[in-house]
Image (cartoon, helix red, strand yellow):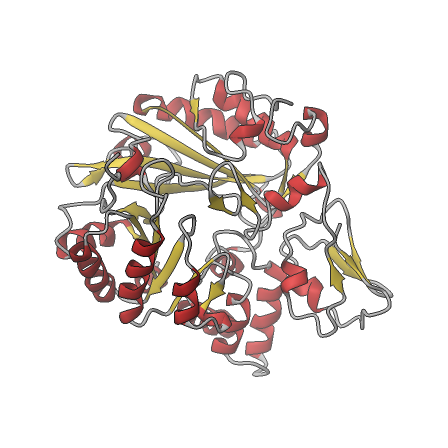
Length: 244
Length: 200
């Protein structure tokens, strides 16, 4: 795990300022809390005047922290740098999300809190009860049983579920889809489960534009207490598949 | 809300299994087109961004099939101009713009792409133990990095530094932008927000 070389550290405290999860305390030297640290590498890349922060090569299950926290880590399975996914960024080509469907991009740990996978599992299980379809090319979904939402040891890293549950990461994005009419029941479920976890999650909703408006917005606006943010990501439709 | 009118983040990327294999020359051409319009920031996670000193030439030379290119503009007019030229280039690679939803519709129409965009990803905010998250003010800066690499502590610290005139808003913005390796961070917008927060 990341550590500060005691012989080099000059106790300036800069690394503690840059750590996104407040895992660094300044004692007689910089001390990195191994439970809070998500191995994102920010401190190593920050402005340490003496390069005292070191991150040795990590082994599983600790390596999972880095894979889900450091945007410079790459998932070979998805071909996307960092823990991200293509999500709707290429939907004009992949057509993963069609009219009459809604995509759910539930990012646990966001904004800036971090999450353990036990909380990811709790939220995934609540989504699975609605029969959602988990998206295949997604690093978090590779750790989940797609029928139950439970963590499974049949993951690309073959890490036992019990070990995965205690892994803390900067954020983890569950990505799934369901028929558009399920929006109210899924939102209710997310509200219910939000009281059972020890972190936060952002709720991203993927929807096709139709007749000049975003298809899901009128349904969302009909749910009491829900406010659709005025900004979002918009795939403009310039992509196309290469001829085979 | 007002500052969102000065933030248009383009993401350019290929689709695995459809057009990603061999797409690097097209990504490079699209990056060249975007660079002509003098973006506020641009970059790629694996190589860094303009704010951290990466030359545009190096960025373009390094681009590989799997990369996501991020380009930031300050005005709707710039966004329209860039998108128009990307459409004319007709390279078949997906483009996403993060901006106000209403602006997205205008931009796509004015650039001659379509009457409205193809797909949206909108948000209804966040849920859970909200008391664990940073304040609304601090999140204005930290959430500009989609990978959460910017800490609340550094933002708090820099707001105090700006307030006491030990640094300037733009210096503060450039410092935090270095943590957002992908280049989606809008340095000019961040400087304005630092300036506003320092007045509180």
